[in-house]
Image (cartoon, helix red, strand yellow):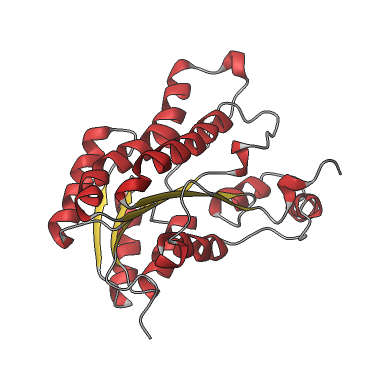
Length: 258
């Protein structure tokens, strides 16, 4: 049986690890040819070798998505290999947390450049081809920070709020041209960043228990679960979905108080 992304060409940013790597693996299993982008060239090369060894069609491009020229060069490499881009997953992102009045201007710019502007750079680079083809799907990996604020995380939620706005605005503008643009808003997901953060506590197991106790499903999610959602939104199964935000946080964001 053909995969749900058979004969599709998909770009995944932040692909070398975590949620991005899980999405790339799942997309390949569903038949997609991959364009993998990450700022960490060494990690990207290692992951691409793993994917190629498993039989996946892969082309890589090391790029800083916060820089438009870098993005355009990376997308050009993918198009040179495959001739088109059918699916884009904007997954790359960075954590920038600071006291608002102590935040350096450069840190503000870095947060917005990667978490918000980078997604727009990527979308702008693939839109012309999608418009010409009359079809395309974009999946933006946002965050529950886009609508549920954790104290002390400024300005990250500002960028993620913007990413939801970007998703919805472009979805409306390009729906008549056959292009669907949706987002996924993960909560706590078992990535290296989350594991490293938990490891900073004096008692990591107790810290994990406290976090899991806040989540109605009583567990932290996995990158693979986000990947399943990305496959759905990227595939024709979600053909009537655009401008939507799929929340994946175990029910945490609907809790009024603990």
